[in-house]
Length: 448
Image 1 (spheres, rainbow, N blue to C red):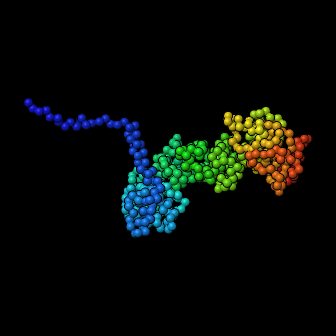
Image 2 (spheres, helix red, strand yellow; image 1 turned 90 degrees about the vertical axis):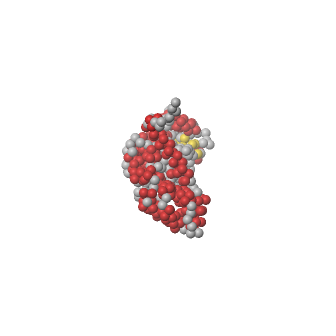
């Protein structure tokens, strides 16, 4: 009886072709694993930096591992050492001589991470990468070619991709360019991209471009896990230019103006209360925001008074002062609410009914009626206090040290109501509007 022999059957080795979804999932898995290794290399590595510096001092070659870790994660630290530019030059020359694909990839990652404000440093590293593109892994060569990762100025082409993308998240573009995850998103190249985006947006606002830009802006800086925080937190001067520059000589519609105010005040605080935080922003841009906040303080007062049926006595004063605001004569304004009005404002803010998002002060330490509030304004040389209910309009010249300061969070009404230290005051009786307008004209030259 013949023994049965198992013959080779190629057909038994065939497997079903994987679905497209499974292929994509596998690609994503491999990309995530590769990203983990990249992020590990991007971590600062002082022990390897010390090895490189010691090796150069002894005229020896550092280990490949030390070269890779410094290239990816410690180039900025290398440059900041004494004689840093010469150390970087030698480092790059050594890396080129070693001609390792892994080292070139690490150098590219380091280039994407460094601060690009020093053009000499950027040019030195970029030049080595451009001359040796064929040694860089293909996945990154594709990104370099498509998104201009080695173009000058850094980030400009990728910024154009972001702003021209339609129905695609800006972060999807960042991810495709290799910049989304980890510290690369907060690195120097990503900062260049974001600042180019800001510069581009400052030249033209359209709904599509603004929608794209606002996707890059976080709700707050408290959630450090929000990747948008890395991009926006340190870039107020550029964000302010992007959102405010188009309105130096014209005005946006009300909805957009409120969105811009809300974004800037929510993230960077009211410039009237946080002058230091806004110190690096161009003064012309701050003036635009202050102009809007001036009008918002006025509107906030009106909304609170109207919502509490307290606006009747204020009607004639509203019409009078609104003309000065619309003319742009009121350069600064600040409202201080009485205790009931403050509670009403807080209620409207919680419910989302209060259109304005500006800040305000509070009246305390007095027996004033709860809805009585005061509007403080600055017109030319004058600081003016105007009460919503019974009271007088009071004027203080700039040389008057008793003039009430704007933008305080707490005010004593008894002090604000004192007449002895004013330069002028007027009771709301008779044709008070004419007398007030005449006094403002005499002092400032401004007329309605």
